[in-house]
Image (cartoon, rainbow, N blue to C red; front, side, top):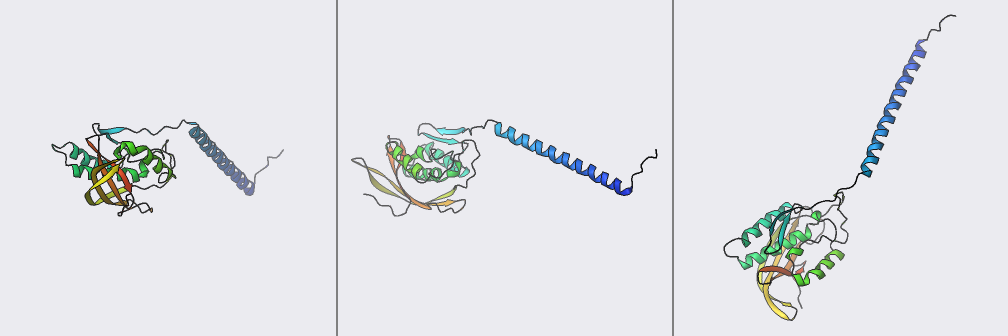
Length: 225
């Protein structure tokens, strides 16, 4: 029997089939690999974001952590210098507390979730719970959870707090009128997202040693009863 001789056309068709089969094998292989990676990745246990303390001023109840912003860290060092100097300048200390409180409150990009309210370390103890609840229900109400570090949400970060003025004042704490400072400030962010850009804070002495925020209003013209 005579051997069948392949024509050029048949050779070309056979070559095309071989190429197509090779491409199909590659596509199936890549798809299987990506599918395996996706399934394997989704089955991996998520790691909870851990917050590490970098420094503290235990006597006053202030801490610095690795989740705090660079600007907060810089101002923390200013506060630390004020508190560790030979004689503490009370007015300077109270003014710095107002700044630290504001930076921490409005730098929402560093917060884990809406329960991680900023500024609490600088707020007056007896008024803290009410303030915390108010922030969670308003300013932080839309803050998404970032327990596993996978949040995809653009949030504000304070880059500068300018002190407009610090004035002597008095404030009613319960039935007692106490002396304090009224600190007026302007706030700058890394980008304008429509958040408060000014505020007035009353800072009073607490427990005979530390100054704490007792009243905060996002305006330079606050109203008091």
